[in-house]
Amino acid sequence: MPRFAANLTMLYNEHAFLERFAAAAADGFRGVEFLFPYAFPAEELAQRLRDHGLQQVLFNAPPGDWEAGERGLACLPGREADFRAGVARALDYAQALDCPRIHLMAGLAPAGVEPAALQAVYEANLAWAAEQARAAGRELLIEPINTRDMPGYFLNRQDEAHRIVQVIQAPNLKVQFDLYHCQIVEGDVAMKIRQYLPTGRVGHIQIAGVPMRHEPDLGELNHGYLFEVIDEVAASCGWTGWIGCEYRPARGSVAGATSAGLGWLDTLGVRPPAG
Ligand SMILES: O=C(O)C(=O)[C@H](O)CO
Ligand SMILES: [Mg+2]
Image 1: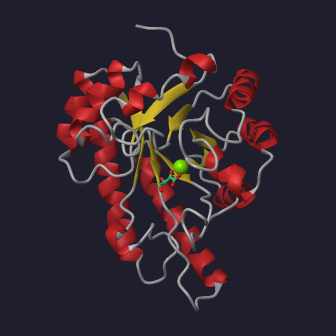
Image 2: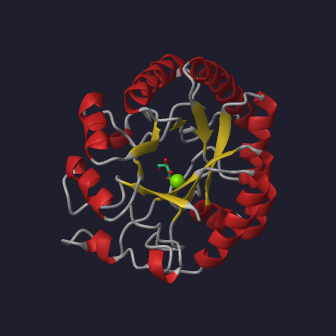
């Protein structure tokens, strides 16, 4: 049975952010993830986790100026100091939230820069960050993201992410395997689960319906089958990760929208036992 984490950035938008922890716990989630914690004091978030018996399973390192369109700094020449400061801040929050893993966004490929130059900066930054995170007892994740949602994003394919992880050879550098992005960019999702889960290089999985990024029972992916494949492969290889529910409720942010959309936990037979 997969362990599902509520993505508090995408879910429960009918509540102010700090109230989403209670809402997720009330729906039976035991793990949460979100994009960025930095608008709140770490202790404020840690208290919410404690109050509601929740584990923080993932969040993202600072992405640069998100409002200005930046989507990570790791591949950007000349931004190494900002990147390193962001990793340090993320590790501080990971310590405070007892969060085992951090997603490091690659960034948008700037026009006119040779891809090989970006790749060199990316891999050097990842190697440095992985060593910092290793010393802090944390994992770092890199996630292929589709360019429909994020035009120009530097990392798009599962095989490229796994190649990078193998080149850098840091045991705590892993892949964030978002099945939504995988379906859009490559397809063949079930076979990629069978291919990559046993490698030990997948640190986290995320799900959403394709193409609208709503609940997993809406769209072209048969998530019930995919959860069966994950259970089968995880049992054989010992994968014990979480699956982040990183989708926008189809009902929007009206009162009760997220909870009303959780029927897939029952229809797909994956609602965790109460308690
Ligand atoms: O876009 C995604 O799927 C992610 O998981 C990033 O962390 C946020 O954009
Ligand atoms: Mg994702």
